[in-house]
Image (cartoon, rainbow, N blue to C red; front, side, top):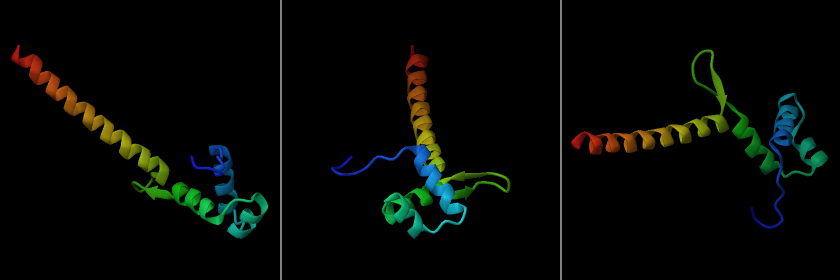
Length: 90
């Protein structure tokens, strides 16, 4: 993290998002908590729901986590396939 940057907890970020979603203006939140609007917009974008199916939604942040997990699992599968090929030759 760079110099002078503050670190906010997940709980704090979630609270700000909830306050915004309940109707509190972004300008009021920025003034009250001393947080730049651009920082809060980033938090809001990460908390935006992504519709998966009719009945399923996840946040953008959760979706990104799932994509990383899928990539890791695909990599592990490739490693296992190569290992199986090596053991099958013996």
